[in-house]
Image (cartoon, rainbow, N blue to C red):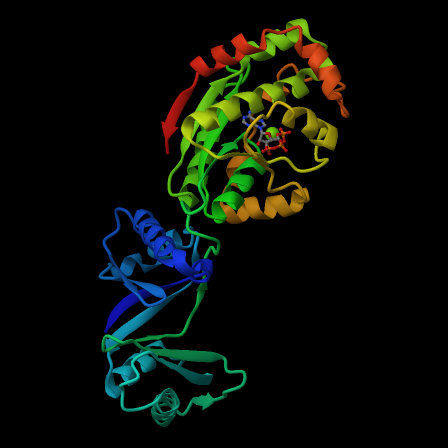
Length: 384
Ligand code: ATP
Ligand code: MG
């Protein structure tokens, strides 16, 4: 009896004519997630099977697969030849020692001499006669033994479904550039968009030496967490130190965050176009802080010329975001203390409802274009 892992996919099957494409990308992503772990992947109808792995690594494999978008559910199954004795033996192994149970059979192999009902009845009956601590309950059993007769003469027997990450295979919905800070929100925003099938590249702005190198390392760690879901990612790190110094020197300090945000958005859009990203993603949530009022978002969005800006967290409360941050495994990193570049030169009374005209008046005191060019020269890129 060989142990295998069944992977069922979620929305992919809805994609009609594109189904082949979605399945191919999904298969590549599964392979990537199991890189370095001995295994074989076989594609069957409507599912993938992982075979020939070290049984001691089953948990590790499930854990890796649980981060692959597109996976609906997974089961660890026993694979046996399609004959009643082998199926019974497998059912006994995966089945319970006591309590109530039922047997469910799915028969892709229609040539088999017994139909689904007959197989379930016979296996159930044999289990009962061997173990008097078992009882059949077809309505609300404590255990359900699943028997799946495949077309290739093999049968899969299992009793558990593990929930997958859902969503669409990463790589089927283009590429976006995520503005990633060291905070809680932006990694969650990237995770949500990756879930819909988008490749994510990241950009981070720092103000070294006003911010320390640990702040940068923390962002690298966060991008690494995200990369487990997005099949790898690139992280571009940009210095905005001189930009902040210039704003501090020449502009009304209350506009620091508003103007800096506009620089970030300008640089991000240009970088996105250069790297082939089709949108910008931020972790903004409406009204969460002063710069995220609708007026704040309007002034930062105002500098965007071509690309859409996705703000998947806009309607979320902080506690909902934290829940997602924990679930994706980013929270413990996000809450480490650090200095974001926005906290350097932070005004006591940041403008909460800036107008585009007021910001333009302040920005007129700066050489915006040369500051952007200078920031571009500082970009360091990491492959994660
Ligand atoms: P986060 O938890 O993601 O830091 P936040 O609640 O602290 O968000 P802000 O600091 O106002 O909110 O940032 C809003 C969004 O702007 C962030 O979610 C992120 O997308 C982007 N952002 C902020 N600071 C940076 C930075 N230093 N580098 C890159 N993007 C940033
Ligand atoms: Mg922040």
